[in-house]
Length: 210
Image (cartoon, rainbow, N blue to C red; front, side, top):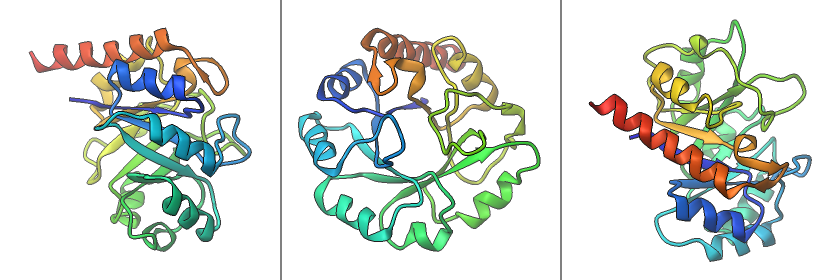
């Protein structure tokens, strides 16, 4: 079954809606330049309202290592997500499970990326938009993804209810990651869109299992 992460959660209402409709994980963005940014204190409040069995992913972009450690000390993060130019050594230093985000464009060697970041739990594949590390709402050419990457693929970048079924059928990712595709406005989620997205993922999984 395809796992689901709702990223860019900024309010308790949105966190609870995501959990209620059946997400596997939520993403908290610790990147000040993002419209979905949360402080460590806000992140702790969001973590406190979540029911059990919903994973909390902390997203960082070229963050100072001390800041990552501060977040880990104050927020019960299950997984780290590094969305910048971090090296494998940087990502591994926290002794915490992590995902490495790769911004995909023509010419990128994803097999080499998987080899470089073999200590990661998976590769999160997002669209390459110059100067913007993520959350662009832009899809990329899924044909650029090799058929047999040695790490789980978390597919991101411009996913919404209209295209997620096609994405799952073509890529067969371990998980899908959505942010802007379930928003009413930047940083504010739409409960109906979250429900529709999750239902579409589950419907597609049922189709593929027949």
